[in-house]
Length: 170
Image 1 (cartoon, rainbow, N blue to C red):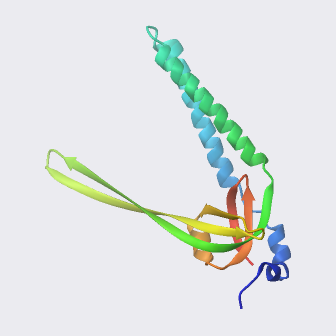
Image 2 (image 1 turned 60 degrees about the horizontal axis):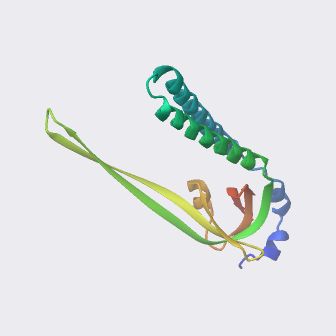
Image 3 (image 1 turned 120 degrees about the vertical axis):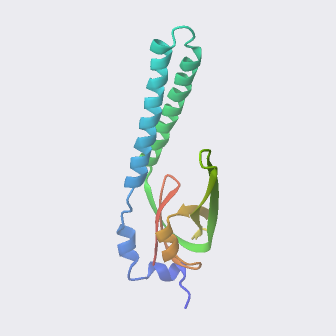
């Protein structure tokens, strides 16, 4: 028997899933790391422009200005995400995709004339969700979420600032 949106609202798990609070800790942590990096780079460029580069502070000054602008955008983006409301929307998984990324690197040791080639593979997982109103959105998910969902599943999509934080099948 296939679950429908109406059936999902009558599910015994509906109330539990409506009260679920997904974690934003990872997004908060990496947002702060990004902002900290941008601000440190801005200060480093300013220091270079004002202290180290007595003859031509233009390049370091321009770099400081650019990093300052990037910092402002990073702060605004992080604030917008953190202040966005948490949305709980019923959705059906319409498609799942896995992208495989292969990176190959070669190193050469001149003394021994040995070449070493290494290959690294990584994957990114995406869910195409269709909401009750017919709107469709594709979101990147972690490996666990991808493993626990299947095409056709109906569940709650937990969104904040347009980012899918979690998906819990009913």
